[in-house]
Length: 171
Length: 403
Image 1 (spheres, each protein chain N blue to C red):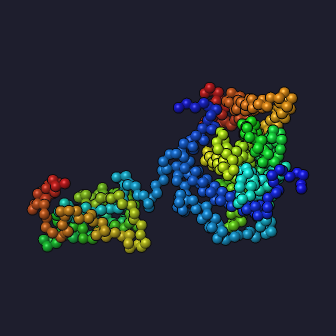
Image 2: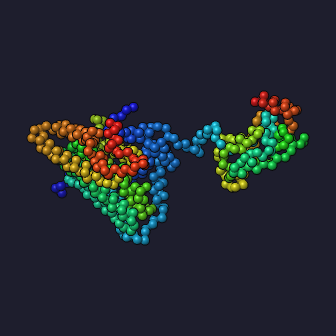
Image 3: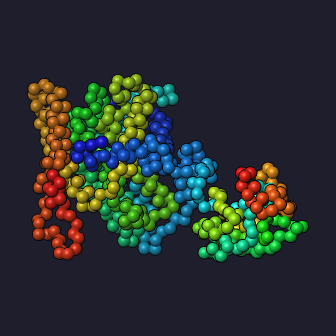
């Protein structure tokens, strides 16, 4: 659209007038919560296999990858009586300190079993330091239908091969 | 009875006068509350924001909440301040701001509690001069506030504010002279009645345009808000003021906006008369009057949303080198035309001539008439040249290359 040059000095009035009838970009946050971008780095989540066993094997690679030293993991071996993950070991203690976390996502890249991922939840304010250290039960994904609260034996196959290859089929 | 009295005024019973006074006071205070809110909302929309929307429906109570907050704040008086004058200054500003509205006709004859009266507190044969005089007294508020604060920035701001208001009051007064010549009266109600067939904004376009610019300068509003430029010199004359005394200055400033808009409506835009032959008369006059004032107030906000602030010398140059000479020449032309039309009997001639004059003014803004203007006037050897380093383009030379 070409505008004569002598109108340049008043063209700004048109801009402001038109803008008045445009949509406001401000989000009225607490009343209206708009979804974030899908890749948004929010609170972490510890995922499960379809039978409810935890994906975390307690390897501590996330804790080692963390530049802010926000993750603390203590692994422990699974036993026939107490099987929490399909592998040899599981994460007995799993803590993320959200006062330290910088939401860089390096822990997610480090995780070898995709046990640790990030959700889009961003409302992480609290009133005490202790409340902001999330424990394993705060981070674990909820039990979906068909899942069973661990500990329990592997339901998706006796051998590792059956279990892990079969687990892929169910999704 | 006073021989100068205007017919239809001065005969109201005392209680009707009291009702009108309270009405004007209430109108101006409510208008201010509304204006503060409306300005913030409209400017916000112009900037893609929603504006205040927390307090009450659509944030309507925002300015009320601000006022309450101001009233509860600590009232600080600087140690160096002249306490009496420091107190007096906001009062002068506010009282004079309210006084202007006494002579503004808000409607024609209306039935007010069974009494037929004009919706105008009073009128006099020099009402418009009275308005100019009262606003001039209001300048004392600015000067004294700046001086009595006992501090540097308020003093500078006060001086700038008063210099600005006084300069633009000259242009404003001159722009009104043509109206006096044409209406044959300085009484506001007579001026409104004289616009029965044709608004002076149409008949006297140059006067109207000068008045529009002058009224923005007069009220210290953007883009002429340089004495109160928050980002540059704290807050101008009211830097040291807090609490209710600051609120009074705030009130006075917003009432001044309503005042100059109301004067513009009265003098140039047909006052309370309906535009385009729409239904008119009685209380409808108040509606039309307020509607026109609101349009002008929107103009104030629109200016603020669109234009950046002027530099002080640019601002003064506009006032003294453009507005005042244009007004003077225009007054001469109008006076000559009045004489000519009285002799020749052609009353519509002035419309044609004012159109031609406006065309000439607009022509002077076209790019090819700008040659040799102040921007390209600089001698060549004054352009700084540093060999080996990038130098900003020379404005005049670059313009020529592109053309």
